[in-house]
Image 1 (spheres, rainbow, N blue to C red):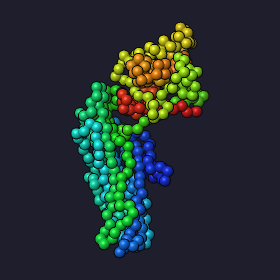
Image 2 (cartoon, rainbow, N blue to C red; image 1 turned 180 degrees about the horizontal axis):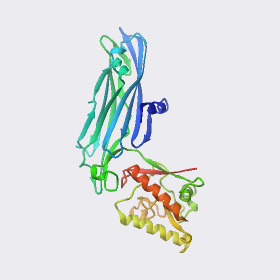
Image 3 (cartoon, rainbow, N blue to C red; image 1 turned 60 degrees about the vertical axis):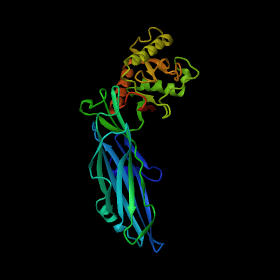
Image 4 (cartoon, one colour; image 1 turned 180 degrees about the vertical axis):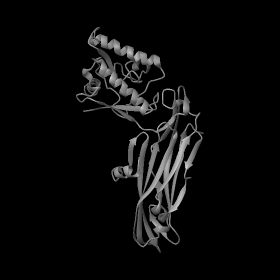
Length: 343
């Protein structure tokens, strides 16, 4: 993500821009009042953008700080004002993880005039391997906090903004056999609920599955198996879907329950004509058809099955697999995602 991309979206209505789980930015404005003998005589203002990017299949996160839009009015000492940019790991799960930094060492201090001449500072953060292991998955979560401090040159006194924090999504480092780069240390992402998009447009290769999910979302009471309490997850961040990978027996059970329901409600020959049993939520989620057998808090029959075109069902499955890989979806409850149907 470039500074121009970030700047074009940031504004009064948006202090945060998400391009992907691997490219985000945030920004803040800082307005100073310049005082002489306790009286305001001038003003200055500047913006700071913090852009976080992660190259494909790497554990190194790059943070670039841009100081922009510097303006002054009246009498002031802005040219000599010191602006300090900082960014640090404020919290870590698990604790005790070793983090290494590269690029410009933070905190970095330059004057207003120096930032006007070269307004960017670039640094990197990488988490060491070997921590956060949980079965087949290793994951490290952290809070990265960008901040700004401002100091007036002698003999000036400042009022207004003399510093503050910028928002940044929590970074995550992971390594798992089912994710890319597992033999070379894994990779990093920013923690954010991703969205899988299926299209119900005529001609879309996954249209039949998209129409099924759309029906399950809009009119769950009209789907099979019948249930008056059915509320299909995956629509909101409060009830996302979560990836099921390591427990192959549970994945198989999800599929078995779904097929059994297809036979019951669409007949033993439901697969005639190249059809397949499509289930939603997917068998590769903890919210799949057998969820209530494993989790007493999950509703019974809180899923939908439908016999539909096998080719389109396969196309949708391929898109799901690509989504899991591209977004580095982890097995378990810590990495939810949504499914959205488009026209």
